[in-house]
Image 1 (cartoon, rainbow, N blue to C red):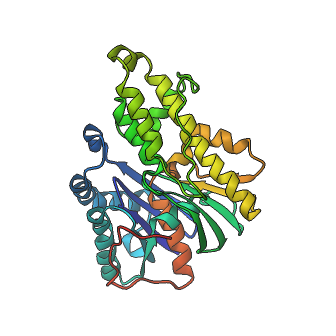
Image 2: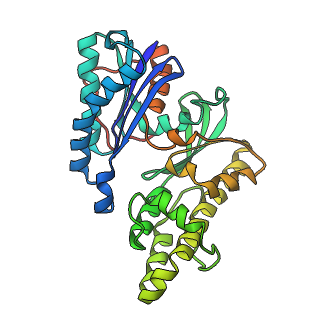
Image 3: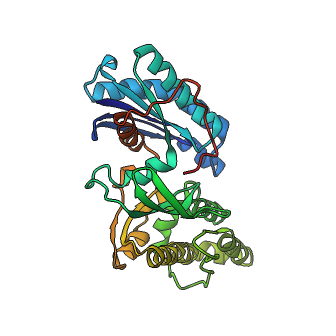
Length: 325
């Protein structure tokens, strides 16, 4: 089955073509225009999706050597995300589905991230623990079977990736924050500042306190210190942020006695996180770099599995910006 995967939940316009679980083409357009605003501007994001989506779909068909008439199913993110961005992809999918007479299925963005770890890896084996770490979401879930989840912990305030973005903006490294913080952290002393390691009760995540600690530290610095100690701030912040994830993951492993872990989301590309995972006595898998960010392949990959099981969406499907697992 040839499936078109569409992702427009935030500031990446992404289109992929899948033949079963095989990727024929995976195109991602990252909207760099938001960097000058220090974060995503919803109106601009939706405008960019509108301008890029059709052209990228045509390019994907050409690169995949597929005619539009060969498409047998369409998978599209319908939540969570920015409402105006979700609507662009969802309405495009509905129109194309209707015109081609092929089924479409709405995909939960969070579910797509969970299974992105298995796009190019071996087939997933249940049960496993999912550690999802992105700009908008940080959670741990027990995956009992395909689409059978128990959410063990979730975000109480700022998500991990969101805290990277906010701290990066605060110390003048810009947006997106993850790559910038990691790049500067390589040159810094991770023990230079004793930022707190976020560890709220149970398995929930909270990064507002860590972010505030960095804010107060930075605010009390002289201008000269701010210039010369950026790398130390980045390294110390990153250490605390990643250590929090590992603490929660260890706790979940002990509680569930499950030692197979799938890590996904934008922060899963962080090298310190991956190094920390290697030091654990667990079997873990994470996506290749291109599948850590929002992408069409993860939507098409999950969409194919849903369509193969006969799961379809109706044209009355609505975008849901607050969709959960």
